Amino acid sequence: MAIERVISADSGPDKEEQFNNVLRPKRLSEVVGQKNVVEKLSIAIAAAKKRGEPLEHILFYGPPGLGKTTLANVIANEMNAAIRVSSGPALTKQGDVMGLLSNISTGDILFIDEIHRLSALVEEFIYPAMEDFKVDFTVDSGLHAKTINFPLKRFTLIGATTRAGLLSAPLRGRFGMLYHLEFYTTDELTHILRRSAQMLELAYEVGTLEKIASRSRGTPRVANRLLKRVRDYAQVKGVGKLTSQIVDSSLKMERIDELGLDELDRSFLKALIQIYNGGPAGIEAIAATLGEERDTLEDVVEPYLLQIGFVRRTRRGREVTRAACEHLGLTMPQQKAQELPQPELFEEPQ
Image 1 (cartoon, rainbow, N blue to C red):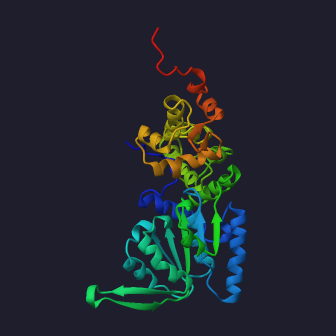
Image 2 (spheres, rainbow, N blue to C red):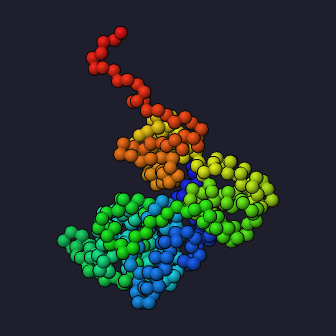
Image 3 (cartoon, helix red, strand yellow):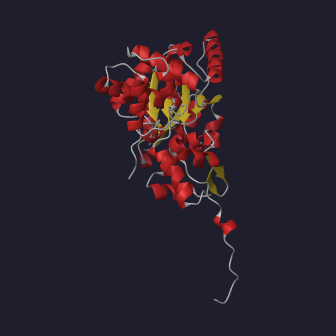
């Protein structure tokens, strides 16, 4: 059974997504963090405006919750362009893409989230759209089938993915700008939370936002989600103001420790330590042990554990580090192969 996560960076229900939309920056000047990416984008946008041309196609990649969708909307605002949003799993056939492309005006932006999940048929269909701004669309079938060359207006495709390695080389090569989004520092997350608290008219004591930021796994979406949970706790158990005690009690109730690890993170590490003797262990085996999807572990759990040095990826599988054992208060396991002598083949029993 999958574990429900408060600190998951995946998008939540519609109500929570609306909450996140309110807090998202609208302009590049409002974006906190990702300084190198923002600087490159500001130059590209300024140059495109001077030439009166649409931007080149852009690919954002990195763990979920770091601002790929936010940056796509910011770019649309900066370019004064309309944005149409879809996702890889939603575009299953050529007609789905054709419906989007046929309604695009010059300079508009088409944003495709989880673009690595496009089917091969759809992916090949958009190649000429990205390169030559035209598509060959087949209508009818059988003897009556005919192909129409459909010209498109110049647009910008922005793709987002958490699994850049799953993108085919032809698709990746058609993006003019590729940007990797990094985890945020505690100071950057505190800045984001301060802005969110101001927009929500939420009172807080000095140091409380820093405490939430330090447990947010370097991810703005997680930081805002925790802020929402702490705010709810403060309104029910307190007087609506964030205090150090309120924050500690709220996050303790959510079982989020001082490094931002939750039950699934700790279960992942404990499985490696207690069941697989510290590793190496394959991701499929760990997923089966925990009853979780492999994609969840690879996209949501592992990136942060790798970032803080609690897990190593090797050719043979995942290995736990001494720092993870110390954090959990467990003893670093010794390799059984080094401890136990191997019996001789056909050895007679004593």
